[in-house]
Image 1 (cartoon, one colour):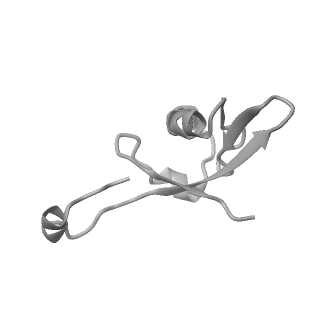
Image 2 (image 1 turned 180 degrees about the vertical axis):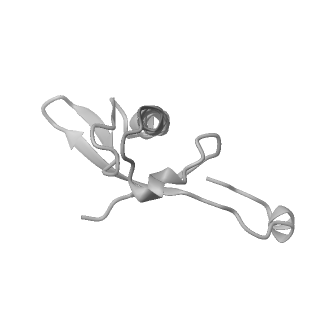
Length: 95
């Protein structure tokens, strides 16, 4: 996510931002949080706290996108344009 002050924003014409949906679950039986990316089957992160889990998922998303690109595996159209070097925004998916 990009945060800029007003002075920086006035000098910026556009920010290319990728928004990637996530789903957050609390697994009562295991007493852990799980964050999943619906655009990447099998892409999850787990943690004892929500903060820990949400901080872990971007690295997992980047790794899975890179692996799929390397293997020539299909990617969701929105993920094809993701630049793995720059930040992206996670947004809770609506069901």
